[in-house]
Length: 612
Image (cartoon, rainbow, N blue to C red; front, side, top):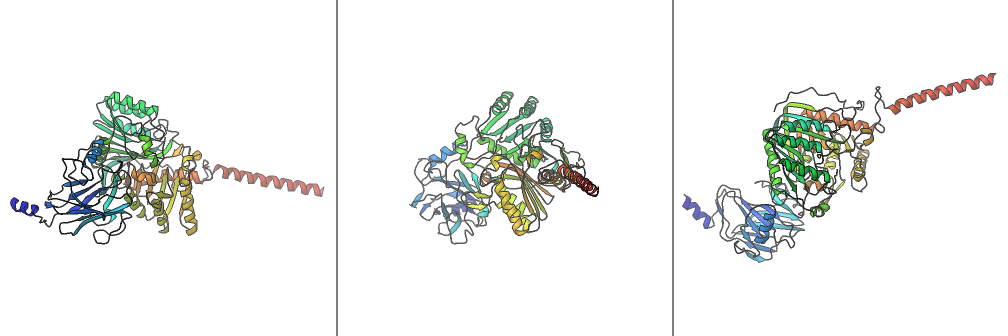
């Protein structure tokens, strides 16, 4: 049987269950002249196939394969120059060998026969795979390219982004752009999945994040893997150091070029933790490592909107950023995020690259700065306009167990599709609290922000929509940031009489440094907690978050949101009088009563004088 199979393979016969597809296209590369561009083929069938005589065309040129048997699930790397491909892979610590090249650079790698000039155009191109008989097997088109045929349907993929690779989502093959995702070079694809959790701890900054995180770190017994954009809290450094002294293995991945550069405090923290035994690496990529999560002992995951700084996770809880966080207890979820961490940590550098910041400015970074016993829902405030005022620092964490479903959200892998799907699925209400947003997205193509477009569509369906955005100057002084979003949404609400309202947060009334949240609550059932701002550049960063489906958890965050919302919209955020009115309303009432009394007295005296 093996001899028969071998005969069929080498003489060009294909087994019916063989399925060779294009799985990666790297067109706009990081190297000058783009000698490292490549295409990857993969056999998703259960049988081998000989691709001798097959070809790949871009419409102007063609490359032709010699006899070559592709085994089931084998990948075939077809590169422009094998030596350049090898160098860029080694730069990322990846050991991968080119199978073929189409411009001669290596004696070790076979050269493909060419017709015409085959080179992928950055503004757009088609990649057409044909079999020995000239029949189209698979097609990918991007940018301004067009293709007539059943092998590709609908709009092309977007124009490529420098340093990013078009990658197929597993073996998915609908012949549309839905099969593809744009990922950074040599990064694996992480699909959206659903997990069940045995418990959760919901918390907020600045009120209770520090104590909750420290308590969880104190539980660690095996390992802690931390990925965070910035780390400037000496108190949290001490908590990690204590874990190391207990024998816990600690790994930390930090963004190598945060806005303004790495602070002296962060460099000191890195040095002290390394001396204690932690392994620290820096993300040195063409994108921003903006995630904020922790994996502990393969048992739990902490997801946050906040960096590990003095305002994001303040030791003194009476002042800081508004942010959300949650601890989720699930071995399967922890394994998922551990795999993400390992993939990113492997690419990290042990030393800072001084030139890294200049290489990333174009991406517009916008920031500085297991079971548990279920407790009763804390009566923070009512989700209504008559909510009571709560002092900063008074909000307690909420401990939940039971039916908690979680879906990881990662950028650039799946965040766009999953967040958009969540918003489009809303039927009753959507509350959004966000640090930084854009009205218009510029990402090789210009479009209105699809997330906020989804909110307008939800309002048109009859949903109640509230949006609260940060008020810091750097989120207002441009012509495409938070205040433009608020004007756009409120304009749409006025024009169409929608139950939609957007506000810039009153930070003085809230007693907060800034709104640093990136969260949303859907229908009182689902909660988005993530590091992703609603900006086009964020979709290309490493961002991490979760969609948590749990009514008690959603109710907790909905009440926190309404607290922030009410203090913003109730006339400058004044403390509410026990009557439910603001203090200015009460003083206004007293003023009018007094004024009425004075006028009455004056009239009485005038009448008395006239009669006298």
